[in-house]
Length: 305
View 1 (cartoon, one colour):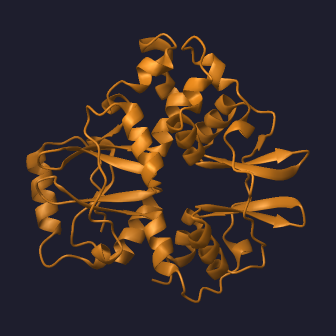
View 2: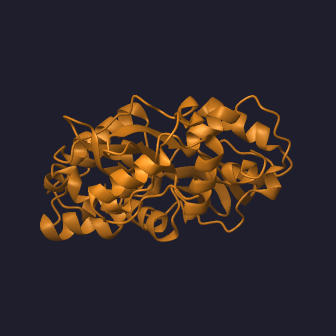
């Protein structure tokens, strides 16, 4: 049974649906979900939200009414990348005529994903239902709300990976890795990398030089770049173009953790936890042949839960 709420009907409808689904005790999803959730308000400046994401290492922040924590939307790392290289960049280019400083001080409601497009689950959801929902809906997180729309928790792909840490998972990486690679070149700009992330739907891109992987550029790197102040140092006249043409090497991580196709999912989980990363390039020698992400690991375990 699907628990996803994804239309714009009234709160009376939502209350009835969530109350109907939530009869009985809470599901075991709370054994892995984050309950003390970091949030933002819809009037928070975009830059303050970006800094909070950078400081906490979070890839998404629910947006709530502060007094009651009623869910209003969510802002994700993908929304931030879209602000730089996707359709949300119109906030900068059109509304603020290329002035990125003014745009970054605008309320986060301008770029957040609104409530009627969110994927939510009720408190009695169990772990298997949540995994099935996340995989079938192709989302990286599920928000837990009660019948009043109050945020009770959030569960993400990473929460499931953490739960798998230390378990025997002898599936081979080669059987679950993605082989349709989307990469960028060392000479590509930050804007080109951001556009690739948005158009292809990936949060991380291997960076190549003469065919060999030399770095990884992620949505998290974009967030760190903006929050660190380097983006402001790169601006001379407050214009976006001066930032977007900087090379992707400006933001990429150079120490790349890789994995072999014959390695196990268990080793992949260990590496992700040990290094705090969400994706592993798969290599044979110096050749990049695939990438394994948290999503791929979820798909590996969905049939055995």
